[in-house]
Length: 458
Image (cartoon, rainbow, N blue to C red; front, side, top):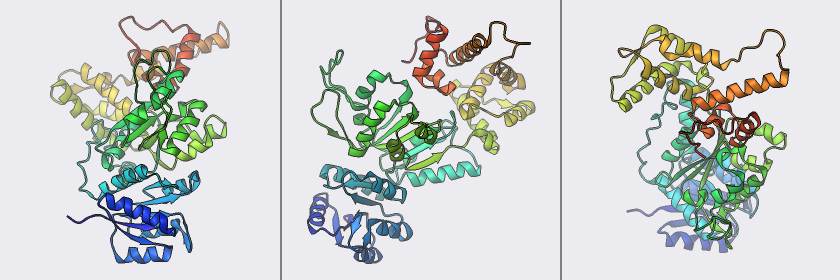
């Protein structure tokens, strides 16, 4: 079997020798180049499994090599070597198409993991996960074709991805699709809702803790970063992280290492960061609510998930898929929609996007008679009426503040009832953080209003 071949581009002989020895011990052959011109000549004369290029070269920059690779051999993963702490250069390289980066002085374990990940791109592609299993990523619209195409491209590098879009558009499913198509597919995919973690437990949850480091720490516990080692860490609702945690997260991403609570040493971790939020992170940065340096670190490439109302041509396909899945789950024949029901769904705005469509169809499937979903089974009129609080005739009787509190109480109670009093899900549906929901529940006197039989996911 032919051994992989790497191209090392660095003007320092000692660095080239170190990289050559390291690669040789991994059964990887290598060629070397000391400048941009020599590197381009090498690339024209052969095919490489991987390129490692220093950003500072005598006759140019590693970006020159990166652009050449992108134009002439885009299937070749290229990793850049940057000066320690120069994250701006690393981010620029990732945006230009670099597979990953490593800082000087080169950490050999980090380098070996990078090489192993890059070489997996040459192996036969792993079977792709059924990305349509929840319905969000299916469809024939131009928007969905563009999303799937970008997902395929993102899967081939290690650049941090920020997935934006309204609630219910399938941001986590897109993250899973990127992971399942990547060379990390055999490693863990760990998803976390950042707004659902109590602030005093965040550092322990993300980085782990050592036995005895605080009251209740009865054993060593790995954090989310350690659990995702070698794979992908999906930070959902990353905008809900408090500023104090944003600082620690930034360091972990930049240094590729974490220190457990109570630990004396940092532990190297190899994770790809994918984050998501339905909030406008750029506006939060402008308002001082989100750190600018963390924003630029996680927002290297953006994937925008289109709302369902902007791709109505996908609705019939998605209805058919969701009903098929529901029928298989329940063990019944797939129901059909009558003409009026289909027309109503096609004209609905779906403020809750795909998640709302799934909920509507699941409820309608349970209520329909003789395997046919009628307009009344959808409950769209009732849903619209309950979602729009009725204004009083004339002025509010008890004043504006009391009236607004009643409206807020009504909307929050409705969200809790729809999610069976799962506060995390209710907060997500309302577009607020778990902490904000908990504050409102206490303010409105709803803290103890949950049915006794139900428990909060927290």
